Length: 290
Image 1 (cartoon, rainbow, N blue to C red):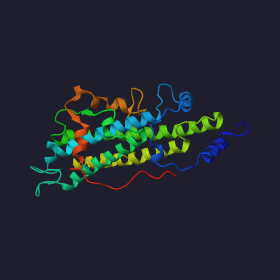
Image 2: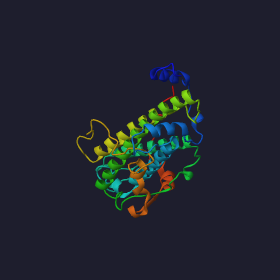
Image 3: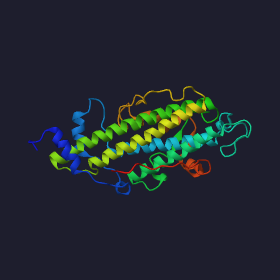
Image 4: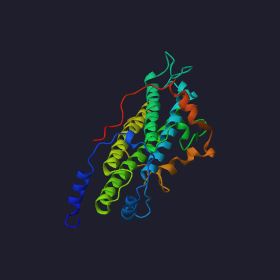
């Protein structure tokens, strides 16, 4: 390929791997792209680890399971009786008729359903057949966080900022993997689990999930009457530089919620078994792969 410059190689890479692959076809357990990782290690800034697709999917699944557990317990905990939610004596499904904000409750109910859908997609990509096989089954939250509104919303915003940052980094890493994988396949004829188009598609999906997590952050601020609720010109990576590996990874940011010293334990299985009784169904599915 010496007769071609880098732009020509890029064009050929795109032509060579333009194809359509559905989600079912990608449901096998993710594998490390060894050749792409070798190239990425040389090109990635020193000190920033390289994540594999399976590691990104796994970290995202842990985050979505954490979010599922968080939103469910918010909907059934004491905080739901705040006047900004279901009101005194109210529940998620039966708000106080005179002192509540049912619309705010709906925000949380929809968020719970959406986090469950995200987790289901990630399981399909990892080849995990049941939530009982997910990496973590128990999450730990500070005492009292599900009892009153201020700590609940503060944690909601902190978690969503971390999720937004993680999916932003994931989109970048998938795009970077796609570029390096194309070079590997053209130059060295190395074939990995995923084509460049697959990896570009994962970047697109990560971006669509990021958008929903951003909605959750803003609607949480609406619940607490924080004005303006849409207070950012751009979402940020929240200090993250990777998704899975390293001290500034999303996994490191979520570690306190995997540690018993943080506070009381909450079961993912309990959240999933009770979720259908409190969530509301929303529409939409992953974008089609072009």
